[in-house]
Amino acid sequence: MTSSENARAVASNPEREEAARSGSLTDELFSKLEASIRSGELRAGTRLPSQKEIALSQNVSRTVVREAVARLTAQGLAVSRQGAGVFVVDTPEYRAFQITREEVQELADVIKLLEMRMAVETEMAGLAAARRTTQDIGAIQDALTTMITVADDPMAAASADAAFHLAISRATQNEYYSRFVEFLGVRLVPSRSLYLGEKPQEVHRAYADKVLAEHEAIVDAIIRMDSTRAREAARQHMHESLTRHSTLSATLRMAKVSG
Image (cartoon, rainbow, N blue to C red):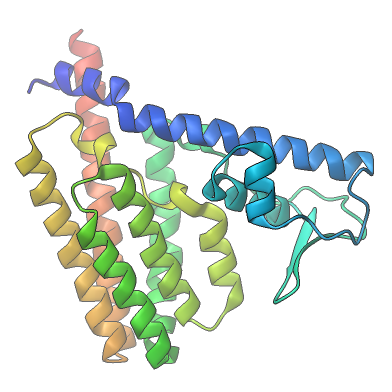
């Protein structure tokens, strides 16, 4: 496949279009909930309906609901109370840091997000190795098994990858890591279709196997409670991902120049 063909494949990839549609639904739902809070329809201290109830009433998936509610929390409009649900805060006045799907539709922005992830996830893996419990190991290994099961589906693999990193974040025993990773959601892991486009299935499989090996190195270090190795494995994993997408970005720029 030529550079021009690769560029066209990336632009027209159906998985990317599906992700964009999902992001649009998340944005729409977030806007509705935000408007309800700011207008007073959802008053301070009010408990939000459950994810299932919102999904049914708005005809969207729970993933869409989860990401919209996570954004409400990140912006200071709602607060999660363990075992009780999500509630509208008393004074929803400030707008906090956020990363929307629109901001990571372009490859250059994906690369910026990967740079940030390298800093966060390196230390996150080290803390997980130092603090993980037996239950945490089970959750991380279950997430890894799911990644193997759905390896042939790029979108499902990206979601499983995000769940894997969420399991690691919870093993840090620091809720801010897990809240941050949960907030990023599937934005955390760009689908490999962005990088590989419509290349043959065997190329996708080789890519999935390489990423799996990188993840297994992180898991092994966490199991052994080796924080140094866990940090090194996580940094190497993020470095490889950053290199892959930076190379693709350069290829697309050359294709654009050559016409």
